[in-house]
Image 1 (cartoon, helix red, strand yellow):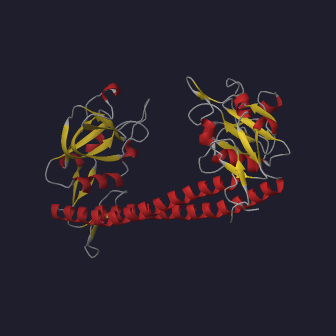
Image 2: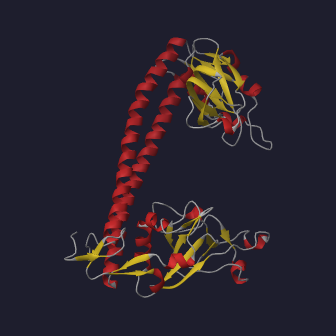
Image 3: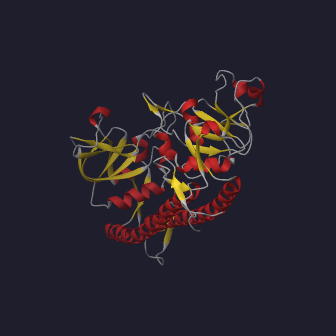
Length: 413
């Protein structure tokens, strides 16, 4: 890779200098059309049920890749045949034109449609679609700055057509897209390998915890059947007790959303964990919290110090000196969500949970288990963090590479 021989000002601040043989134009002069998508009548199930024609919405766009493959929601060929949607041709570049995801870019390699939040850009012979998509993708932040901001940020068709774009020769555009396709594919493969490594580390972490809280640390100890499908064999000297004899289960207290902010002193925990802060607390100490309502009911969180537990969390107050972390991880292993009761909203019945039986090791073993898990999970978490940092670095490099190549800062032709 090298720089182009000579450069000139582009007269666009966020583009900067460009190679002297490149030019800058507005999209309106390098496109055949810019169309806005439509939504078929939602009261007609025949337009949506069992559809297989891609109909994109902002939820389908990614900040990681410019390629759009399949939409989450489909429409039927009948909606197309009845003219209820606009059909965009192959190689259209789709841009979200309104809302929080404004400026998101994607390219399709087949005819498709979209809802009215998306503009479809069809380039003419001066711009190769993939090059145009990459240029817009890497400059999405700058594109957003061109929008009107009222109730929602918006880029209409006219404003979209006024977006500037650089124009290398067609041969250079082809060299650029070939180079970037090859390089970004290699980077994405590296990212995928590291993401898989993180998954394996998380699986190792979960297996380590499950083994410790259900089997203990002594591999040579004699075992007995716990009578619980989710637990299986446990050390012979461990006792089986109902949860209510280990801890007192009680729902937290109600709190309004207006009372929660990010400036007060005490953290607030609900059914799904941390929610914010408030100026009061109803618990002090170290506790296991169980999510009580919603699709994630039964999930496990911890709270320490002074905090507020809302009515959507079940707080466990230890009766004796049993270890909080030991109990929390054991309950996580038991998957309490399986005991949720279906109603208007899934929820856990506290009376049912507190009468579940659990294996209880002696306090000294609980303490040894917690100390072991603290040490071992810290090592795994450090490895996860290192791999996450490498992924972030690769993503930053990927974005920088695309930006430098499509704006002519690096020559690949």
